Amino acid sequence: VERSGTRDCVIVFLSDGCGSFSENVLRQLLQGRINRGQGMVRLHTIKFSGSHSAERSHTATAELQRMVDVVKSFSQGDTFASQSSYSETVGAISLAEHFEALAS
Image (cartoon, rainbow, N blue to C red; front, top):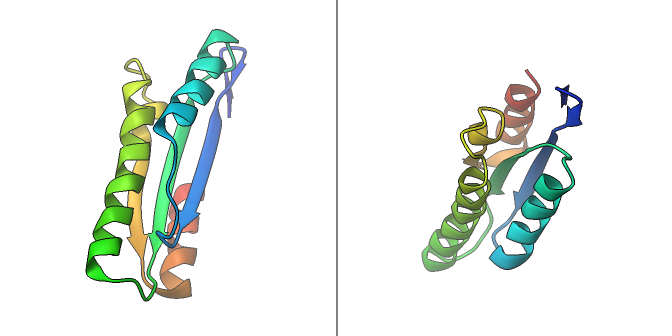
């Protein structure tokens, strides 16, 4: 997405909830883009259902939401970045619907 001479970035992050992320690395990525004048980042995290325990599912939800919260904290009131979101899907049809909604 290009506006005001900068290129904003949209990231769609899919997860089954089996991994973790480094909040520090995400903050460094966002700060580096700001320092270089490369524009803002909008992050959409999508958790797709798996056969994980309820506890693991809750942990995955919290981590993916935290990623979105980090991006929003860097948004500095920017409407593009503040539209970052977290969602969950069940099945391929729901996942395809999420992609269609993000693309529109």
